[in-house]
Image (cartoon, rainbow, N blue to C red; front, side, top):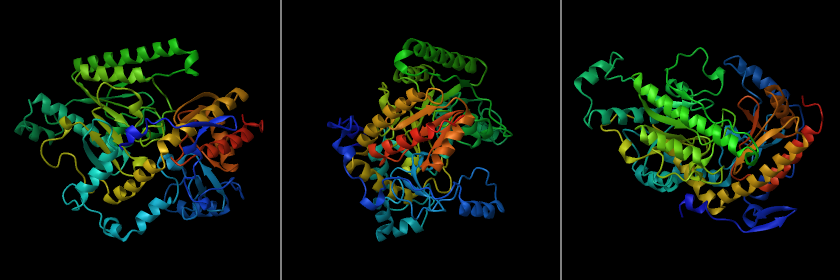
Length: 497
């Protein structure tokens, strides 16, 4: 059964300890030795061995972003071991990129399978010399979890190059339409070599304040989440629209939030018209279902449906960046499935929990001619071997159901903590287990994250003052309860300011 249909099943609910948990959520998802009843913290984190390794690494590269060193061989399931023997409950999972946690048996078995040996050893130039089983793998793996209505896919290595090449595909589509479907002219070919129109056209991608889509030059021009990501780097001057800044809880601010979304949609329309008048039309709009890196900013399903209509009315493609929201964390395989769109998005980009980068797209966006969207590797077939195992586990263990149920526990618990510590937490929000809560300032947020780490929880921040939960799909209600208990103990210390 396709995963987008499997995700619509409603689990049978039974009350457990005052909460509604399903039989699915209570089922054992991993062998006993993959789970623990508590974290273990032997040293301050980073500990002495991590600090020594940091000194060694700093001799050959910048290490200012390194938090601590990890022992991945000993890490299991939802538990991350560090170099000093500390065992942490991981709710951040390598910036939301581990679908099944650490060393999942299904992935270990895929690596042990000698039938996969050649795939792991011989990384091909997929755009020119793909392996003989590549069409079969693409059909059985990537197309099995394709967003409903999208029947073509292009693989890439990571999320940034997925978005960058989706932008290129949009520009190629737009110019092909302007030429009436014909191939580039001699003038196009000659002028592009001088970086001049018409071969290098004045077109743009509209993005949103607070969005993040990657760090290559095109993606960086559409990213507006943190100054450190952009400073000192030349940028393309493309239009930027406001993204709704909703207030929480949603039920208390329904009218105010509706007006905020209306303001942003009006701005999108106005910017598109102004861009066309100025001679740099908007060829595409890129948007995240939830602005993850920018601070977990949400918008309503209605907002996204109207955004799609604005794109269509103005002959602009709609690119949905699901690099972080894709693969089940919101309770559906793809977060945009919650929106109830009239038709599929034009593009859906992916990476992180998919283990391989790329984008799904409508047939009309397939470029004419070879060598338009290509690089040396264009992805990695070895990642498809692992992804096939991941998809099988998601289906067999009903992990989309698990994410919805675990998300209920997380959201209920975070709201309880927000009510208990209103001076430290506010703005609890989420979809499935894709949850977040705000702190008063960046300094308080960073203090809380450090305190959680030294209590045995690996968490992460986003935006200016947000703590985000990005667990693996095997993160169950009892793990959520464990995290919430530790979070409460951190906040109860009374010195978080």
